Length: 113
Length: 114
Image 1 (cartoon, rainbow over the protein chains, first blue to last red):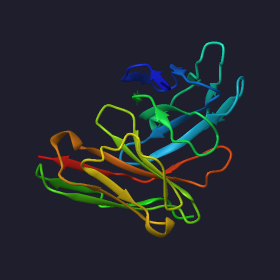
Image 2 (cartoon, one colour; image 1 turned 45 degrees about the horizontal axis):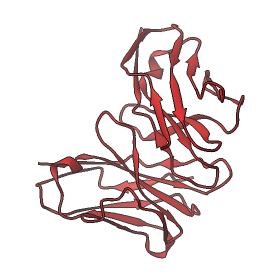
Image 3 (cartoon, rainbow over the protein chains, first blue to last red; image 1 turned 30 degrees about the vertical axis):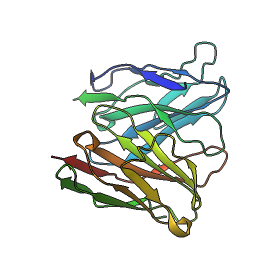
Image 4 (cartoon, rainbow over the protein chains, first blue to last red; image 1 turned 60 degrees about the vertical axis):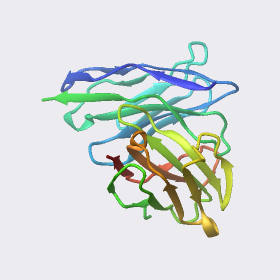
């Protein structure tokens, strides 16, 4: 079945370090891909999305490129801040017509000053 | 724009008791989802509504879980009787069902079953 696998955490970085969180997926058809973020004490928020191969989603300095050939959607940021500390979830939806999201297990990021 | 509202935020019950969670989606959103998030895992869909009809409830443990969305707006998720393994955060999300399927999540209800 459809699934998402993301790297185990926690990821611990110093401020201004480069961040990569790996995400790979298995899906039939042509899924849309998402990164959601959950800040401490808050609900899930959409961080960025990509809906077709080679699309790049970006927001708040984060980027991810939809790579169909490697079935990946890795999250990157060039310089993390303490305020980026959160749990990051990679997710997919099988089609664009309101299908529910399938999530990875989440990766906890902790950034220290 | 008001977000997705959920209540209560926290609930502690004994096993075999019943519990109900309430969700008020963003105004005008036709699609409503209930997810279960067990500690250390990603959210997993329990049930999806389109207006007041069920689209997908294939992962809902129907022997103990039930959900309804009367009038296509608010929704209630019930567990009866609760088991220890039901301890989780229950998330409600809504979507306009538009092309990009962005879902907006509520803050969740954290359930602890003792």
